Amino acid sequence: MIHNKDLEKYFYVTDSGLHGKGLFAKAPIKEGTFLGIYHGPEVEDNGMHVLWAELEEDTWVGRDGKNMLRYLNHSPKPCAEFDGFELYAISEIDADQEVTIHYGDDPF
Image (cartoon, rainbow, N blue to C red; front, side, top):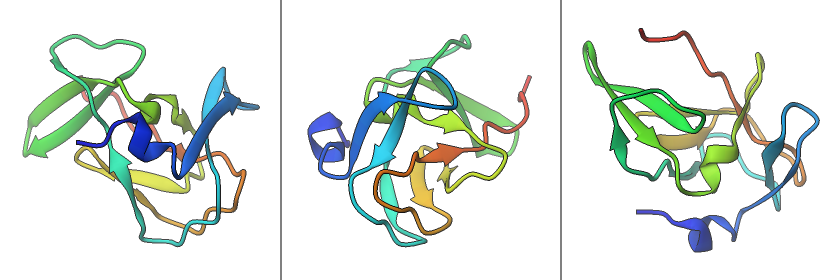
């Protein structure tokens, strides 16, 4: 389980030009790097920081984010993506660059 103290080695949260607060890289990150796990309790209802992952075909699980990864904002050209609840860099990420994901389609 990756909590903020582990994530703070690599990221910081500050105002985003995209939306509210955002997650930013402290140092360059190579493509393919494991970035962390979206940690939080499982929920059945959607919410502001709920991430939905399809863990098995047609089986969706929601987690209400409680660590820094809840500050990931959407971009049509993201630099990271989730595999389940694990986050990976899908391109090189520069120091002080906002780490973004594509929110995808609404599973419901």
